[in-house]
Length: 150
Image (cartoon, rainbow, N blue to C red; front, side, top):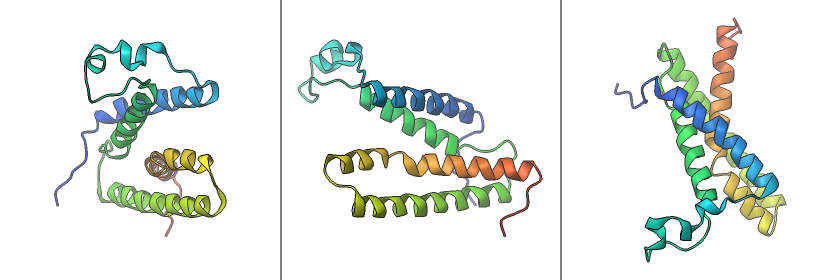
């Protein structure tokens, strides 16, 4: 069976990106701060291009870093990658999809207007975040001598 996981060394870079940009993203949501450095007119490649608008690209940079970080954390090999780890990874991915789409169904029923757009924006990140949380929680529980879920 072919293994499409990243090397284990990528996981630490993923954690750095994920944790730091979660903090930056939460601070951006709370204070709504957008540095002028990320304005389209301040970036030479964008300023001289007809394909980009002249808005602030801070949100996009945060989103890209969050996605790359969570993909690296989720899909990098463990130190000892065996069938049990692969089983936990797969179950965590399936569980995160069920949870994510359950939350989307609730949002469709109970959230309206522009708040719904915010929910959909956060939904870009929640499947991978849920997977990271559950996968690492199960690994920690297994290492600490916890019993298998079955």
